[in-house]
Amino acid sequence: MAIVGETIKVLFIGDLAVGKTSIFKLFKNHEVKKNPKHTTDPDIVSKTIVIANPHTTVELHLYDTAGQERHKTLTRQFYRNADIALLVFSIDDGDSFHHI
Image (tube, rainbow, N blue to C red):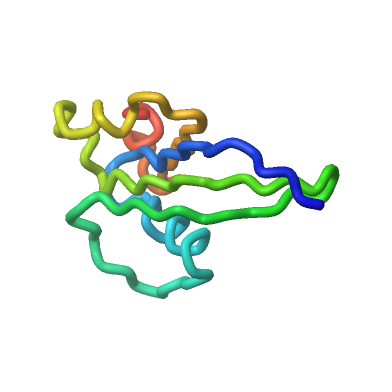
């Protein structure tokens, strides 16, 4: 018998063009594109996962901020009540690490 767990809010945060959307789409629908286009709008998806021991169902709410961190007023709504933040940066761009 599965136990229904909590909803977990997960944010993908980082500069433009560091790979947030690529990681997000991998979680969302197992899609990987070789040359993805820049994301212009934030994206939100819900995904249910099962944790094996004990059998618990957890609903993830995944938020791709699409590099909107530069517009601080837009992202405050995303940050509110977040449980997990995935800080994404490019190893080719040292500034992207310092910005997070």
